Length: 383
Ligand SMILES: Cc1ncc(COP(=O)(O)O)c(C=O)c1O
Image (cartoon, rainbow, N blue to C red; front, side, top):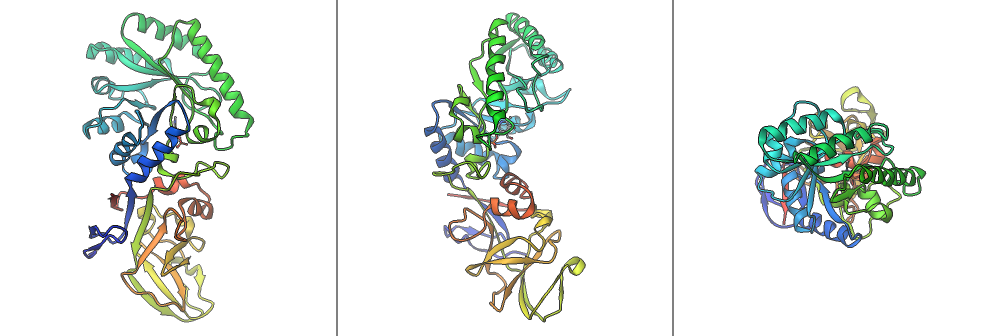
């Protein structure tokens, strides 16, 4: 059992042994900062539980910071936002056949349409509900993921123009997604921009003129102003995590800090093996601290013998394998005690590792590190 204690930064009482502290004022401030970088409206991406930060608090903070729209991956996420009292327009970006489209239309959730089967399902749902569906046509400009290819685009536009004339759909948006915006100098960015402009021209020739054209995610918002159009869809930048090393994050701050408490300490002698597989063997007598978080909480097992945490005023190496619920760090001859605070990652301003540092040591990206923090880890919100 964890014990009642004070949340260190604020003095707020929390009983958590391990927790992700999420500063919602930081999310709001990040959104406000992003809004200063573009004349386009902000559609904040809060999918995947707000990149691990908590979808509803992230959405509320983003709206407070000036976002006018929200984007999620799936209809269930959009419905959860509506159930949570969010009134702002929401775009649901991905669907497979036979989803809860009637509920989505009733809840005024905007639906991405990038295939003729989706258009047919949206039309059927709009007819059943008796209300036009709000759609954003998705065109594939080079990512080869969602959206109609250039070859399929005219057919999708024809079907859409007919449906719009019948009053079954309202075309709110036309959009696409960039493959390489985290590398602003990558030639694919210019090629995708040109393909998007051409797709908009083709749409106009079919009589389909959207209210919102949107292409840019965080990297593009920060580094490619020519991609901004009418709306931008930042995700990772609203949480203060860089999309990539080439993106300048001045003015943006990470919102999440992942903390725990030392659960046990012990001294081991030189030659002693540590954790499953005994993949670490102490070279000299050393103190170990047991941290009660593991891959069951989203701590990557790839951090075994490579990652670092902040403990007792210094970065300390993770020794041995990360287990499901716990892992060990070495503190050398420094003495720490059960209950001492451990920071796995945070903004990095006090010396602690960042989510990007964890990504680098584990072969992934900051996005994955924050998003994978597990459901077992409580989120404690500031302010
Ligand atoms: C279609 C789409 N738009 C916007 C975003 C936000 O991207 P980012 O987090 O890089 O800003 C994503 C995230 O993956 C996405 O899939």
